[in-house]
Image 1 (cartoon, rainbow, N blue to C red):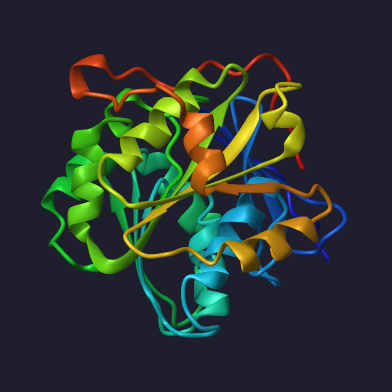
Image 2: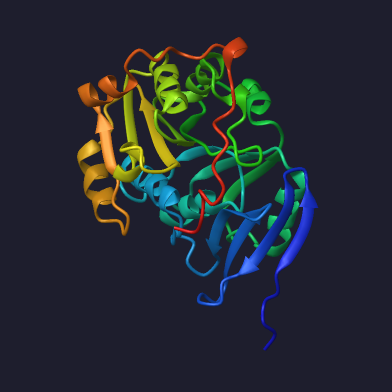
Length: 281
């Protein structure tokens, strides 16, 4: 039987590699310029290897009763890890995936086939430009996991962008974002303030070591016009191999402090991660 072989391509993002996992029969790691970007197990699409992906999965599990189909918009495609997760855990969901790198989308579609019967539409487009043309009140969940190289692009960090996200979401919809930062958290605090200019409810999920300023890492932000089930999120994230802390309410307002919402003209990308900051977790 032929062993799966690594696949390499040069796309708009850089040098993209799909590498088989020797420990899982049909699992693949996607890297961009050597940095781990996505992990997919075609036999177990509900398996989320990366910690930040598990935290996003926990939020997706708690936004509605288990198994209920949702309309989900994903900004950022990668190897389609989270769209596959939603298709497996919420059959019948309708999903749109917007990925600026057409070459990456084509590589993934060719080598990592989509689940049979999944209602998943792929769009090669800039995330904000596509969002601005999307119909209002059309989405239950918006997942923002967009990186240009290793940084979140500046035009996806402003109040104008968040207003477009709020317009596309339904009244009880939920916005999720994967954002990287390190102490003193100027970027993360400004992003919370920016989301707070549009949404009433905010939640931050991150590892204690990151929040204590010990290292650079990912944080998951949740925003909505309705209460978020923080008790369930606390239970789920505490049970992970690398437990996370769930911040909300007064403690989160203290964390945001005097940070101001970001205007388009002041927007900057997320900070450049230090060498070796991201690995498989």
